[in-house]
View (cartoon, rainbow over the protein chains, first blue to last red):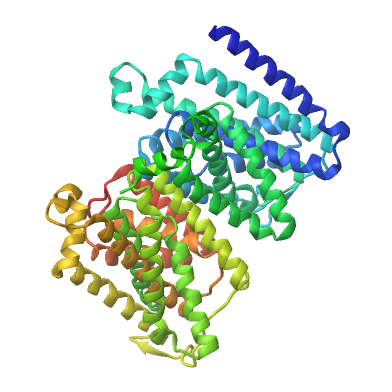
Length: 319
Length: 287
């Protein structure tokens, strides 16, 4: 039974991916550009889901990996004359290295301390890079003119598919159960024989890999990189809001959240740019109060509970 | 030597302001056990209130301080009573996120209303200064320092010796026991948040005088307030003075000896280091 459901999901996911991959054939250039951004944000949300959703360590500094991926590509291509693919690998290697080096001490912290430490680390890395000559300092780097938008679209779509497959594997594997156990009760997980340090660092590194690839693709796509855009702290806001709004700790939630919120933000940004950011803020405040477990949970339980769904959510957590 | 003395004076004056800046965050964190990520945006609002009072009604920024504190007090009360109280028992991540959402909302609302330009409050005594053992002391910075330290001490006296203050401390130590003694936690939480917001408002007004204002300055204030909270701990609001002075002096020394672009690197580096080595805070205990 379960196998049958699973195969239906996999088949429909493949069909949707193939259908999406035809967008460059019929979409307008603006729509393709919007789609590339939405796909990259969805990838960021999905990667955040690994460490924040499944492992229960809410990182507020994933832009760290995003920036490293971007700078990996930029430094690789400009200073060492690497091809793009090798630059990506260089960026990913940097991200993995940092995930291990910083993850070991930082993942010992819990709750708000972990959140604050990651938030600060992203700032530290940004300040560090802006003092590096090889990275162009504060001025940044200009990359060679890039490939066609179609190629970037397919790359981003492929990356999102890969990330989602990894999350789907996590959700159904021994490794993933270990992560969920850590999220629910780390002490108990340790007693039951989960190597918590190893699992946490691996989850952090996995999330770092996908975030770094997304950063690398985006850097080459916009062909320009400076510390404040590479380590853009609003990205942290977006990836977290999208994941939580969609449903953190679920396979499709982050994608759903990213697509819905990117769409609405794009429509609002046509009027005034800051309106879109304002909207993100309001969404997060309302979502945390009325549907803290995201759209996925809402779809599952709203038909049964009706408006009581919102009352229940408030009643559990209110003072 | 002369230079070092001047730098130390600058650092101490800055540190006093930093103490007031972080006071609200430390109080709310200690009592409500939530990290208020919207703290910096409340500071930003306080700065704009002083700015508009000064530019349109010619109210001196130091005289405008109580108005900005009162406004922020009311706003803080409403935020806690009608928003955060609804999620206060949720996992830490939810409260972190809702204050984060508030921060984004306030910041971009401010951008819509006030515009993104840099603004400053320049009363006619802005440039005045005097010489203290060879070091130049700008008058506005000294005033700001004095106001900051006084407000910090007043808050400490309030928490230590008044009935409401005791109720706040009791709630922070043991919510259930405080409830049994007749403390209404909803009111106390709202009051605590309101006091924290009022302190943020005061810090904002002072910041308008000693530095520049734009809608995005908040996040840096929040981040630096963390650093101070981690150095000073949450147990005693007087420790924020020590935390503020340490951060202020370290920042000016970094700017002098390593380079001005390294100040954030060093202060957040300190934060991460302290968190890893002594997660309970350097001077006192955190939550």
